[in-house]
Image (cartoon, rainbow, N blue to C red):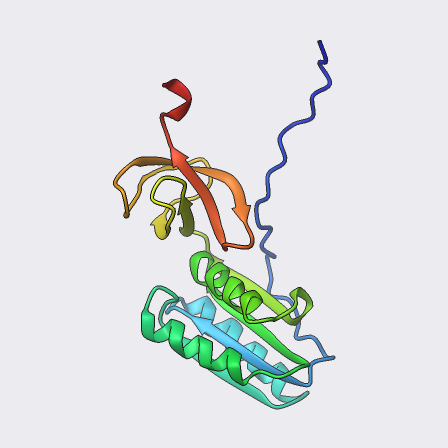
Length: 176
């Protein structure tokens, strides 16, 4: 029997304690402030000031990536971005992960995106049962009720980067 089994690999995001600096190699910048948190406004202002000193800069202020109108506005911002543009995202974890995934889906490369999370209270989850993404209050290890199918879910310590969601499944599946 092999007793040298490595611990499980968790793919959890590691958010920096301080906002990353603006990449000076950008040919233009889009700063996206999502939500009303005071720290979001503070970081966005600092990024805009730093970016404007280097190249043309656009500031997009959104309420939430949960709102259809804000997702549409973000899509328009992404569509206007060109090669060399740097995208700087600041807001709560749900909004930053959702925006980051949308940016990747639109063709942005990892080196073109910088992110700073001001609050990890809300998380995007992907329910294994109703197969839909949802916004919930909680994080890895927590149990939440799925807004889609109503099951009690465990949020797993695994972020599916391609979905921008933590994976979640029936909290009692292991006891069945």
